[in-house]
Length: 233
Image (cartoon, rainbow, N blue to C red; front, side, top):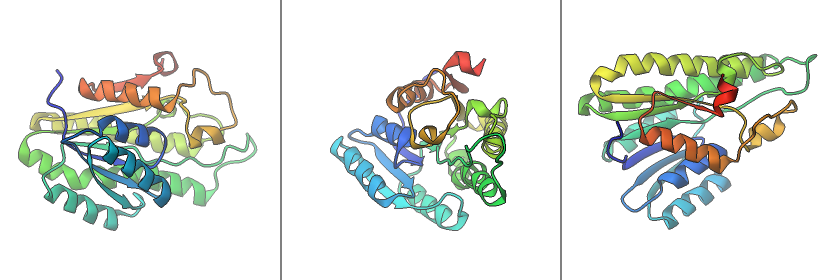
């Protein structure tokens, strides 16, 4: 069942794409947004757009693959009044060069650190406060690639499969404490990452449409948000 609207929200990967769309979706008077990204110029622009919509914004340039700085910032944001909703959205992709080219050690490692460990680094520091309050909401942005590996993107698919499994496990673990966990598995939507992908992009949707679909699922506290549904199937 839908619950009260979250007022203090953390979004990683907020400087573009789905993260930007979600930040703008939640920006409103009374909302306090903690926005994390790696591109200073783009993140500043998103923060200003959110402030123009009435939200208070704390924006930080942090790489989610680095747990120390991220945990310190998250704990400081948590101390300011708790976190109602955290959206672990930050992600990167690697090689899309073709069937003769794998990711390579450096790129594959970066994808796992950012996509999987980055989600863990984002969520773990906040679960204690949510458990203590007996409420909260967590969203993890995985991918339909988590269900079956996409050719030319093996490390990306593996990292997102880890995100999906981690989220499914968290849901069962945290449900008795009043915490909802939503695992989001989108297919192609307009983003800098999708623009790099050289294969087919069936049923591509806009970043705004993707953000609206995720927001609707989070408002309903759905266990899983899969879109387009036919791609998930």
